[in-house]
Amino acid sequence: MNERTAFYAGSFDPLTNGHLDVLKGALTVADKVVVGIGLHPGKKPLFTYEERVSLIEKSAADELGGDAHRIKVVAFDKLVIDAARTHGASIMIRGLRDGTDLDYEMQMAGMNETMAPELQTVFLPASPSVRTITATLVRQIASMGGDIGPFVPTVVLAALKEKFPA
Image (cartoon, rainbow, N blue to C red):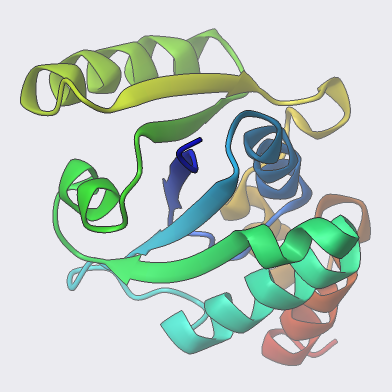
């Protein structure tokens, strides 16, 4: 049987409990999940690429236990379909929080399907407990000294405290 590889793309700046929720779901539909960190030259992320890789790998080890070995973290700076193809994926994972996400993601899935019909987009709804979490809000709350503990894995919380000391 062929190994099913999924590609889960995002900026993960920082990784949130919402991202982890989708990652857990991705592991139920694929044998291996490649987490693709999108690099955009025009954007200045809070965490470097290397820091994000480390946070994702440590969070996966803490939260996913024995399944953490099924995850690989890579960078990409081109079209997501090209990155998915490069890493042998047949599935593209997209997380959904609400109807706004669905509308946008349906457009993207349609465009991607036209360009790469061999890739199947799989939408995974976020669990109700993490649906409101966005990395943007996490960064804003952390920068203002708010408690972001409920929204991020423990290692990410520690890293954010280093970026935004009280």
